Length: 289
Image (cartoon, rainbow, N blue to C red; front, side, top):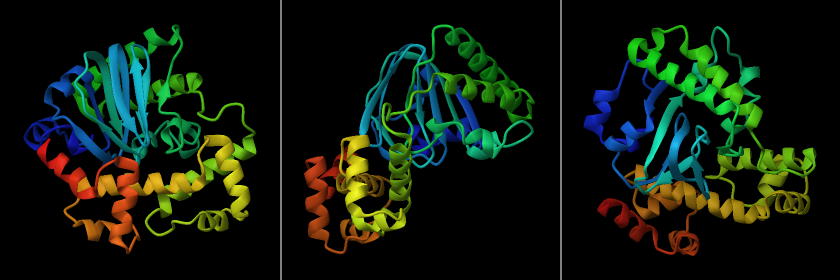
């Protein structure tokens, strides 16, 4: 769990030796400790929220996602998220690193099956009514084992792997009804985008990395996502800017340079185009919250 969920004093009380590898808690208990709003932040670990009642709303990447009882919300490591409201709900939040899943029963091959743990995955999963009782029992047992024994318990990893496998049976990709080659290319573009956004801002840059023409990249990405690659690039730059405005002490011009934009006035115009306010005003709003 990133420190921005909870003020530092409360966070220190919650920490265990395995913090950063695995953490489990009831959603309603975490909300009591949370300081809202949480401005755009980058998760360094995977976050999984499963509700047993109520609703939960979070902005993940560019989109607002809401789940209700017996549904799951996933924020993969590296993704940008934010939320700003207290909601009446109950359930479980589990925060875990990829390394936690690799052990006696886990493997990289198993993890690769879970598309919802990737930056291009669908963050909302709707398990079947038959799965809900099993998932609740698994989360309850995982929480009990974690509270009593931490990661010394030999049951947490197999139980949590069972949770992920059960969720995977209900998982639906975002781009359904599209050709597998188009989806594969688009996912490759998204992965490269998060990897190179601070240095590569042209569609041709990504087309070159993917060994295709810019026109072909434009056609495929727009077909699969209904957005052009140039808009994906702009929106990802703005997301990066939001994270830096919150999580760093850089000046506006330094943030612009950090993003590979050496014209600070252009950076401010781009930010205002997508956010509706200047970078300086956005940071001021964060500081006042």
